[in-house]
Image (cartoon, rainbow, N blue to C red; front, side, top):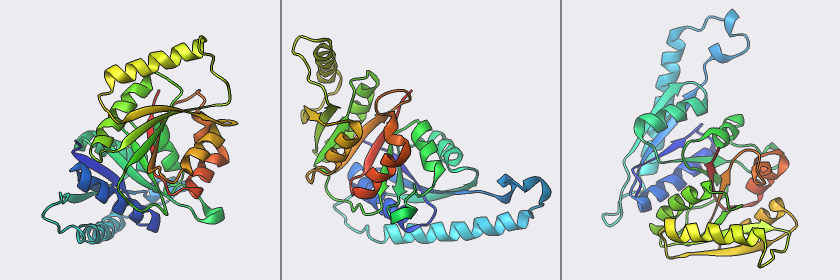
Length: 286
């Protein structure tokens, strides 16, 4: 199904956990893995114009990082020895630039189909592992982005929930999810979180019917169903969904100026990532 997964790393514990999770995914998806590290040079710092940075420093730094990446590759591939299971090829790249810039370039050059990143979950220090870069990835990623919580351990994926507000762009996201789920023979639950009653003959019901009709026609997957989630608001609804023990992954389309936008603003984003062990699959939409 998938050719290559990209995993950015800063060699932190959460990032290494995401790399392990991504490798296990790759075994099932029969995909190869590309690790990457973005080197932020002093020339990008505020005092850059007043500081001369020797090229030798960059060469040494790149050599050191390449060595760390080489060790990470050995650590990851050391667990892949089964002749009955696909063993992904794991390679790495390191380049100067911001994380999003490096990732974006590799996505295009290497025909990457999914990016897997780690997110931390340690008390008051909770941040995306790569800080603002992760938020930029959420906003700008051109391909699916899987955020793996620090405490998430890979297990057989049996159920995926996709939160929707019935936007047309969600159909393309569901097509990807269906192909992804098929590799695991997993169930896909389309959930709509609302605090309003939907009248059987109202405009909302017509919108739902039209959306589900498109799902039936355009998403060729038998193990898919639709559920309402009645809750006070989208934030609490998503938290309720995340707490369901039988759920293995949450998927969501992120675009500006819609009811899902605030999931990626303020404290609830960090709250959701901090209190769940469930990976979050994000589709950045316009």
